[in-house]
Amino acid sequence: MLSTSAFIGRQTVLNRNQQLIGYELFFRSSGEASGVGKHSELQADTQVLANMLNNMGTKWLIGNKLAFINIGEAMLNSEFLELLPTRRIVLDISPRIHPSNELLSRARHLRSLGFGISLDDFSFDSPAAAFLELANYIKLDIQNHSSSEFEALATRLRSYPVFRIAERVETHSQYHLCKELGLDGFQGFYFAKPETLSAKVLHPSLLHLLELINLLRMDADTHEIEKVLKRDIALSYKLLRYVNSAAAGLSSTITSFAHAVTVLGYQKLYRWLTLLLVTSPNNSNAPIALQKTAVARGRFMELLGQIHGKSHATCDNLFITGMFSLLDVLLDMPMDNIIKHLQLPDEITAALLHGEGPMSPFLKLAKTCEDNTLAGVVELCLQLELSDEQLNEAHISALAWVEELGL
Image 1 (cartoon, helix red, strand yellow):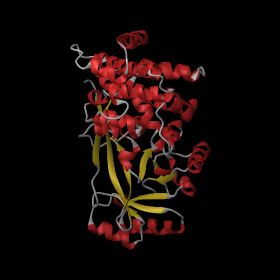
Image 2 (tube, rainbow, N blue to C red):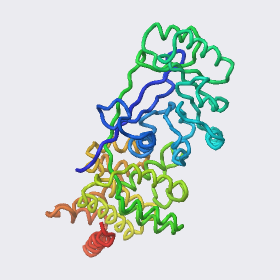
Image 3 (cartoon, one colour):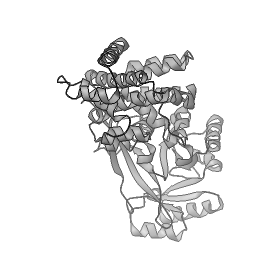
């Protein structure tokens, strides 16, 4: 299996009572890296967003807590931010940003959408102090000030309606000073060192990404977009994971690609695909043979559902069950770990995890038809009330369909 890993740094943010309120998320290029390294600020900011939304998931990374993410000027202006779950995200604005009227207006708009605004390493002398009227969190770096300077800064901020967080707190004396000054939150080595989390990543085809972006730009029919999604297991997996996450703000489960496209809308889908495009390396796709098998399996099960006269929704679920049944191989991780990141209908989960439920006989038949011995095909056809002709026609049609897709 040819795959890559995604990494992200995470450090706890505590309130005055040392209760966890959130995490600051950092860019990490590897499990050993401790900083941004040679990567640009925008590259680092973009990769953190991609890992949150597509490679790891906000639920796994932060649960029901807040995520403080560092953003520079370029990311502050980026529409990628609108892909994030606003109520869970605090935008940690770099002190290096020189605010213009446009940037202040942009920050005001993001605050109106529900994002938190935090000013990192704050100082009244910093150009970024112009954002103070918009901030609801202020981070004070205790390592960058003498005790008297830090006390004066913390005291002056008492008159502002902000949550004051002492950062880079490393000793008991520093913690004691912060607590005496009545600071609202803490972050630093004294409480917890940053940890690096990792996850296996399956990348979509660059050609499919470009094709979808082009279709959206041409305002193509949803059916045309759905056809491209069905060609790429990585794309379909990431889309359903995203649309069913808190990032999409949905309470109901979406399993149909057409429904997912409709719910997101073309503009948001375009942003999401663009984020995938700029963060997905061109040389790390899953083996073509394995992708073909996954897509063919999904199509075969979908056709069997149509022969049975199943509803369009059920046929969609059969396609997804077949296509996702190889995710454990593609991602090189247990299926139950993968399922935790997807909100799938019970019948799909039962088939993938336990080989049970109404989808299971179709999946078993699809797997059996891939085995040269064809052991058990007769029994499964009897169970599903399929004739030899119907089975052969569906199987040949599925294989031909995959070839027509040009995979």
